[in-house]
Length: 117
Length: 111
Image (cartoon, rainbow over the protein chains, first blue to last red):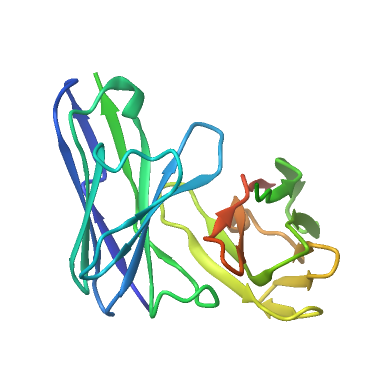
């Protein structure tokens, strides 16, 4: 089946550090990848939709200068949390679909737990 | 604002019990409804993608129904087993809208 790898699984770093999270589709080409954030006891909240070779589409309220998304190839999207602060501590998870259509299941990575001290 | 509501928030059942929970979503501009199972320390796994009103899908002991006119979907688990313990997420995809997830139903099946 379709496999998505997300790395790292956990990051603990100091305030002001920039953190990069990678999301790779291992056995299929993902023209569209999605980045989510989960707050404690809340649902997954879509942050942005990442399309290969073009700029990401950010959801309202998500700072594009804070959360840099790059989707340079059909198998890799990256999310960089720039100058992270404690309020950025959260669980971040990516997903990818084949063809990026809403009637296709999303394949998720294992998520990244980010803790900013 | 798109609201996707799941109920109950959590559920504890005994092994062998059958159970069901609900996902409510907007009844207009429907495109697709997804169900995922999310086990602790694993990534969410797709169970069903439903697109037609009246759809009923089955995967082993798990089945789901869809009513797009009234905006709800039920997920049923027959003869629950401890390995069914997980959070079950539904996600609504509307025409012109990105995917919206519910908060999930956390199921615990006690042996």
